[in-house]
Length: 474
Image (cartoon, rainbow, N blue to C red):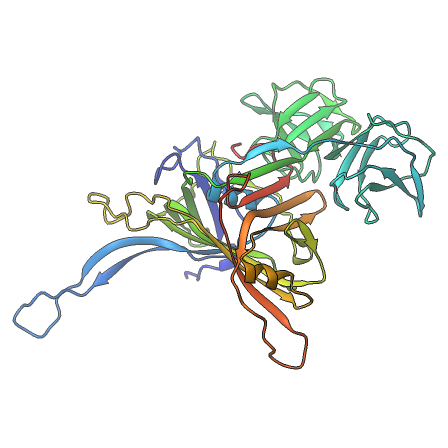
């Protein structure tokens, strides 16, 4: 007896096409399994009523219209898979390693309770971030920054030993792991597997390995990596590890800016309990939006539009070399958020802020010979807008709205070493005076529009994601 497909068994896979509507060939695909709350895309073809007269009042058979492949998705905002959606919106980012910072030429401080303060002016690191300290006499090693970490001081859990640091003592945003006691594994094809239980490293991360006989060096984490094994590109050499070997993974900063073109996606909805696999082609992000505030789940709404969707009986990643990647899930929460307005961090003021990006796609591009599907989806001019709600404490927003003064906005989240931000260098508020709606506290609401005029970033919005992935093309 057949059973209804269950939504909890559903999966969404995406890959980047080589051209509009052209997926990579089997064996060279690089699919990703992405987390989602809902994925409501579909392809539909209208049945239109014909006006043909046949001598009776009976209607004739309808005729078919064009194909509309489109829909919406709700995705959780996280530190890894969000980078794939940003790539779909802006293209590949400019990626650089997060800069190493140096300690001040000053003394360590005993903070009590087994914690030590290390002087480091304007270090830019967050509490909860993993760091590796090098060059000191007593504090070299890997740590997680304590909650007491301040703007100019790093606080770590360690036994206090008096030491005055040198400006050559460094602090790197990076994770340090130990290999598991066990054997290297020949993965064939010039790949080797190294045992590392519950490592949490993403495919595409850059790791530096030290302490081994045959595998010391810097590598990219390859597809085929599992929860307990790191796969690297290295000719296999038999070696048994004792668990003292270390793996360091540095954090990277990915900067996404508005470009002339957007990539297109292959998206696949997988129903393995049927089994049915619906593969969308030529999919582009038409718009995206999110709202920050409250205590609900932080999600982003993404609207997609594409060429077509076809039904298959085997999944997109069915070929032996098309290894599906499931990136680690590190969620950003509402309480991780912060808002900078006019270069100043605001707290105790704003109750919500939203951003909506319309990518200006031209979807009316149906071409002859394409079977009623779109022949292309060219880009147009983007539109950026949003809303801010705040406690009416002063006239900060009202003054700028009334005078038309330009300001800057940055919506950001930080979860330990992971960060995500959307910065708009030039924005302007719509004039709107606050109202009195009852006896309780008064709030003010403003809409804003972001744009590019003289901004130094040459992009109306710049998205920056900090995580432990070095390349998005692995």
